[in-house]
Length: 343
Image (cartoon, rainbow, N blue to C red):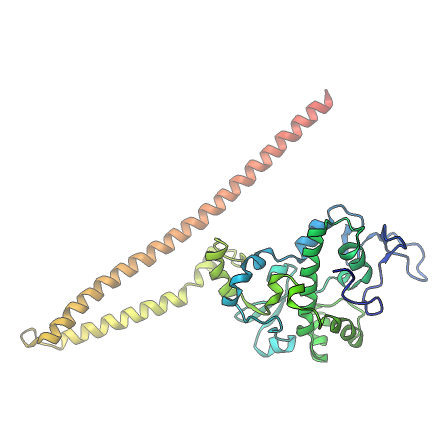
């Protein structure tokens, strides 16, 4: 990418300016407000414009590394079409509540009656931000990481081309309950800005954004196989809530086994032992085998759930011990540094 994806007249955030030689970026004072002390990213007071860790911040805010790793297998999770994104009103029509998230890895993931949507950071609407940090050769971000961040930002902004298609979608995005867009943006200005992303090709965005809406339920399942994790994101904070997701399938399995065993028992009970023909003798052997199979399945399911509980508890215990060791090590290191400094 050699220039920002939108021109300076289309930008929706005019708080930043790049100097003539493109050596620095500043926030000039607004007309009538005198000198300003603001030297941070618009909407992010914790991140200074000259912050050396801005690369790490942008990677955390925009990159979807887990989903990029899963990209070759995301056809198992969602439709292979980057435009397959329901608009905000379409999401509500499907009975999904719009849940705000700052995690880019949850953006456009849905499960049951909710869909996660990440609001647009104000600085991404600035032409100067793109020019200085993501395009310019004077950027403090190394080129490889800069391209990675730019692709993720392009895909993220392009997703709003489909999320906000009508005036009703825009009203949902700007109400106080959701606030997916910064304040003081008109519908016409936003449409002028977002339509510039209509020509962005899938090859220009990160692998995750070559897909649209993704099912979180399927993603959690396939993460166990391809990412080798218990889950994609830890949604359940209590063991009870985690194991509750297995109740439905387990009840269905037990109901099938119970009805089958009852039907076999009833069939055998209605026949006299001396009237059993060859077919009934075969039925008896099948019933005996199915009864044993049922006992084996119940034992296996119980063992799997027990092992799962032990694994979760062990993982959390190991994490707690690692954190305890890290804190003790850092405290010891600080004490040694203080002694050295004192001497």
